[in-house]
Image (cartoon, rainbow, N blue to C red):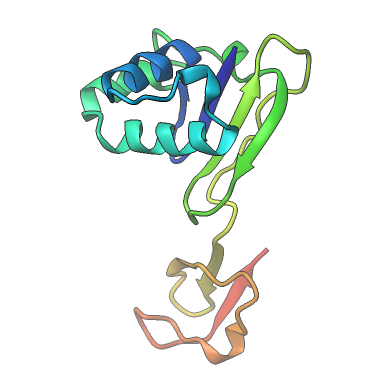
Length: 144
């Protein structure tokens, strides 16, 4: 079974059955089983975008319906095209490792030396010597 795991602030799991049901509502000439991994990722993104917050609740790992077990298996495909999410397709019927734990891993935390204000920037390689604190204009350092 191919589950799509989306890492955001929370970890969401769209099971193959959920994706198949959503696909069948799209009235496509293609069969669900003919979809490539890239198409499954695209379908999961579309499903996440078009699902209400209350309905997304059933896909959050650790809540009543989804478990960490559903994030274990052989990694088939990954997508890091959006800064604040990491998407994986996991084949749960094949032994493998647990899905990665990612917490805002592509943002650099910057701390002010004077007022202790912290903020995040998306450029991991930014020259922080050229940055100042937006709160007090003081000197900042990267928090590694």
